[in-house]
Image (tube, rainbow over all chains, first blue to last red; front, side, top):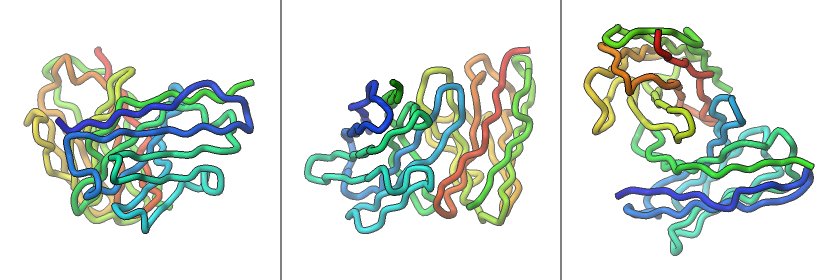
Length: 119
Length: 107
């Protein structure tokens, strides 16, 4: 079964840091580009970041560029999101998602991990 | 950045109704349009990819159409398990923007 499991969320103060992880199983992780998507409480979906199979190509949303860093370890079948200088508006459920096919759809998604930025 | 809009933002429908949700891109995105369903407290799930291709395991009452800037998701006969929020997403270029969502609830 293809599965993604996020971890690392929690409560952090504004200005703090957190590192999210996404463990992949059931597929050849190194063959797929990956993404992070977030959803603030009661709001819609916001794409956060993309990383290619070899980490050679990385993109970020303007809202996180310079503060967040995406990375992956293909030997460990894992995706990461290092989040620094966290703000209240970064409070959200963070999902990792596999990117598939020529038209680059997202499937599957992990169950999500909640990040709460609050003093 | 490519902006995505959806209409309506919400709708109330009955079991058995035909439901249509529209999605519009601010510029042409060819067929780089995907639809996701999200139930409360759950992760989004892929329904339709490349504008009109049905994801494996998704019931055939779901269908997608369109190309360029205008797209449609249709549920031919609404079932109780279809009450959820539906999002379109463009995967033509980063940032991979989502529409604001359409909430489908029980009439």
